[in-house]
Picture 1 (tube, each protein chain N blue to C red):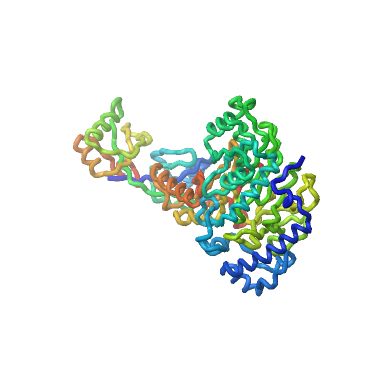
Picture 2 (picture 1 turned 45 degrees about the vertical axis):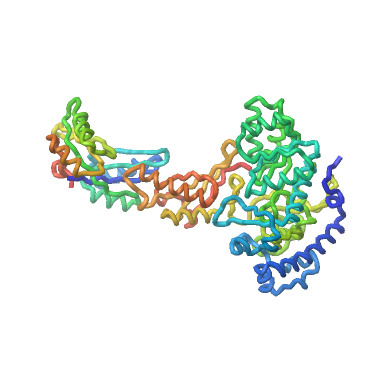
Length: 432
Length: 143
């Protein structure tokens, strides 16, 4: 028996969904035109006015927004409502170079929490469940989003936030949590610890909602088997609200995008041309209900495929595949967005050569980041303590820039491979 | 009184040290002292050679990162307690030593220790006033 949170929306006919999208898009474009000068200027440069947008079929006429726009417009340049009407700020995790801040009115939060509530109900959640939210709380959207969704469903909500595994397991067993929300790598780690500590019989979990990083079908099977649960994927990004933009149903063959709030397109990342359904390309989102941060045609850089084939769960909203990669060089490490260019900036600032190599791996279910840096004459000393001191400064500067710890490994000058003059910057050893 | 030590950055990688000793050998440079301080990932090779100018030229030419560090060489009685007596004198005088290592034995049977110091003048005056001998480059046969 399929479970819906808002059945009239989740199983609406395609015609109905399109009608909502047409009406909301027209309204949203007008709202942005009137209230977001930054985007209005982009429209004017492209020679588009709100009159040109009569519905979803005109969407392609609008200019794209990219992460670079978000940086240019930082902090308030893309805000669609006066501060007096906004109640919340969320942000991408700690990256100074490319920080994204998003704003919410109370209405935006309500709709966002509805989206998360749909995900929880699709995973079998009811008001009888105890939901353990082990995503980070604070600026990160994971904790607040699922927390709000869990409240909406009426679940007994455990706002654990991330980390402190001992306490997570104690609450999970003592309070008999039935749904776990966290990153898939943390779920894998928890599962392993459960087995090590012989707690398997005390676990009452039936489902998990795992997102904010890439994970494979193999990881899903491992987690499902070791915890005896069904593991559901959830997708979202701070730019479009947070988790809950799309979520999996019991069929587990892709994530339903909440099309009453977001219009999804797949484009060719090179040309920007919209591709037909079923094509692999870059996912672009237009928020049609967000008031405070109304992004139109935001390029996610995630590569995936959309399908509108009928789903056995009865939901009619389009499904997106798991992201298959990125159309830029962004890495997601421990759920944090990392750009190689940020690392380059730090190295140059600290007086090291910009010829570096990043090695990403996953050890004990946790991502590791190592930056190989070539020794510079100015940084060298006959004293190891002096070199270590310089290295410590570099580690601290990287932490400030990236928001996560990066191990630094100093190597010989000119030892990092340059193939035909172009160095291999990223080695990602994670098997996901 | 100081002697040139060549300090070379050494990544912990097979063949790095072999490459350096081979280069010195090919250029007919004789090593008189060698010491390595290392961490897990890298180390510092400290060398005293008979012709430091030539050696730095050769190593820089091969892309090594190095610097010249002034160190002081002390002649130590080659007998039990020889080094202890020197270090006692330094400790009593409150003289700091950053690091030290021994030179390869000299033909005349004297032992020599290399010292890296914060304050060379204080070190030398303390030692000479206690009848110890600080070796010159000429005595050591270094250019």
